[in-house]
Length: 240
Image 1 (cartoon, rainbow, N blue to C red):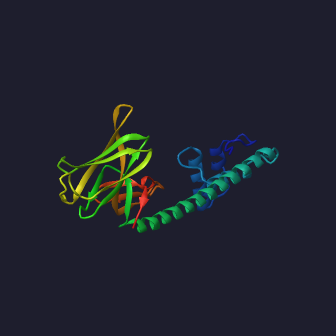
Image 2: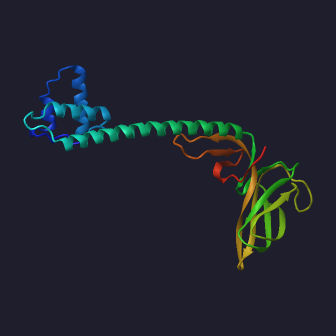
Image 3: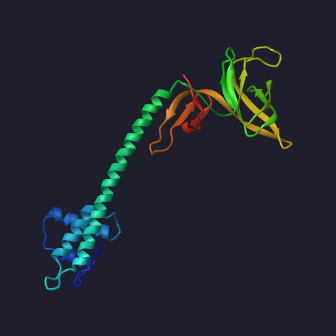
């Protein structure tokens, strides 16, 4: 909006100072408009309209404002109003999205998921099911299971595998066939590709203990019992 272009040659501050409107409400509004125009605060739609009306009141009656310029100012005001409405609509959509996230989060707490990671909280009285991501066909894949003290308790040989997710099961026993204690174990899968030892990604089960909902529209984060947090988009499977 042109805030100083009047045919009388007066500046905006001179126009506002010479305005014949004397009510406190209008004076406060014009003061706010002046501040906005000088860059001290955002120029909102109300201040924009007040400046436009004041400019029209103080124009030279013998040389009124050009119609083209006036229409351009009205078009700017219309655009400002449209942007304000759009912002309100987007805010409403964001609120609905957050509500949807909250509902989704409440249904995930306590459920089992399978997600990328190298650690799992294992109940050795039950079998653990996991997968290894194999990037290409290989002659052998091995999964090494290490306890909290860094000791290897079991090595599972999966043999040759094609590209894709290769499943494995651990029955909770060590290489000697003895059931080990329940607890947190580390799973390290590896293979040989082009003559080089290569580590592979493992997908392991975990239980969702709580969910963190972003207040800024970010991704939903699942807090896994004893394992930290992970983004919902990285979860491979959601179970019961």
